[in-house]
Amino acid sequence: SGAGREPLLVGHAFGLKVDQISDFIIGENGVYKIKVTKKDKSSGLDTYSSYQNQLLLSSRPSVNSTLYQAVKESAEIIDNRSTYY
Image 1 (cartoon, rainbow, N blue to C red):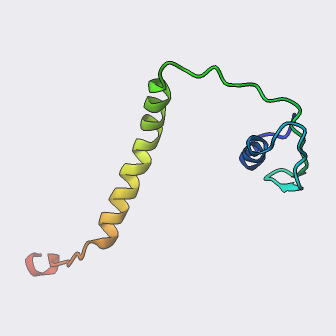
Image 2: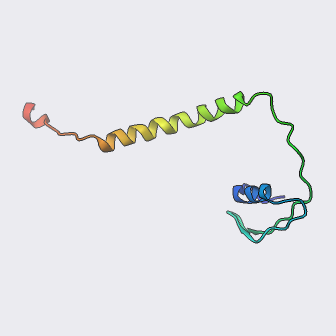
Image 3: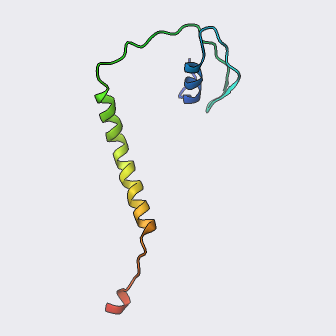
């Protein structure tokens, strides 16, 4: 508790069995050693569409930007403006 956002720590925790102690884990905000004391089964969701929509909406600008940058870098643009002006 109080570790902040530590995705590596969460990943390690999911990989441990109950009463298993981890090795030292180097996170973004410190070094951790964890022990899983209990695991509860997730109740699951009937549909994950709201999460899917959220991911789609949040990643769309990034995809468009990355695609535009890739096209721009691969284009062979020749500046012929001096011919006309």
